[in-house]
Image (tube, rainbow, N blue to C red; front, side, top):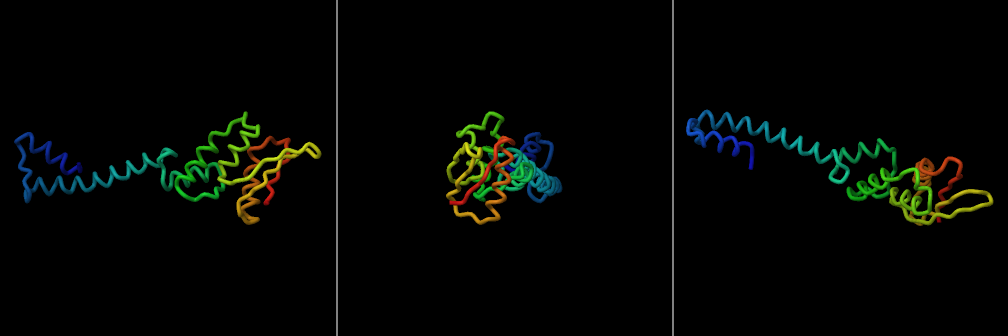
Length: 156
């Protein structure tokens, strides 16, 4: 129900106001309702963009810039999932399952391998990405790895 309908019903129910079409009051509440409808649309959009699970545009862009993250999946659902997975990474996620959560946050496919001599972890990416994307993702994934553990992203 539009704001116009709500105001007209409320004013009509009092029996005091003439809210028939063509009256001055009808024109006045029509003008008010146009402004209120625009305002409520903006407030509803802002509320939607405040939450990752419902955001569709600037809410996702803001969070992606905030966490400085590159994501291969540019669909709305892919962007949402990437942000949610990234924000769910915590200090105990330095296991293989935790590392899988990290790679899922970038929406890239591949396998982690640990080496003892020399000590390092590699992620063999099976997705078709270019060297610029590889370097960007590798640098961003390093932020989630323990600082003492060398990490390398390898293209397969």
